Amino acid sequence: VQLQASGGGLVQAGGSLRLSCAVSGRTLRNYRSMAWFRQAPGKEREFVSAVWGSGTTHYADSLKGRFTISRDNAKNTLYLQMNSLKPEDTAVYYCAASETIILSSVRSSSAYRSWGQGTQVTVSS
Figure 1 (cartoon, rainbow, N blue to C red):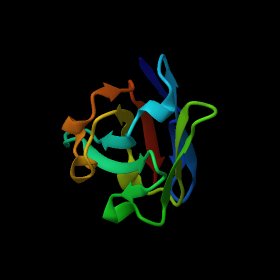
Figure 2 (cartoon, rainbow, N blue to C red):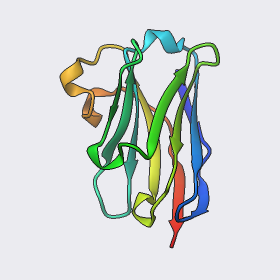
Figure 3 (cartoon, rainbow, N blue to C red):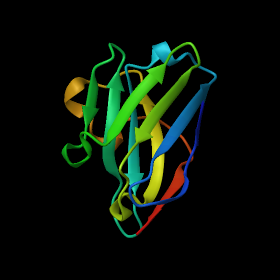
């Protein structure tokens, strides 16, 4: 199983980016939850957003309204649309997937067994 994240880059504050996470070796439908996490330099990895197999979405409270997560089962790809980006959004963004996660753990990085390699997002002021 391979998760390949892409779409990161350098953008000015207020701009937008769409991250993609292509899944190979397994069907997206097999995953109960797929998520995005991010890690800024010197900080711990933090939860960004997750989408349940049913389509239910979860967001970090500070990101609601700016970020939108979606999954395209036909393309076997997870997305994260990021709008109104701020310098504090600068981080490496990772996609993650879990087949067995329970709802109460959806925001916990330790609950996800499959991870992409990360894509760098840099927001300039």
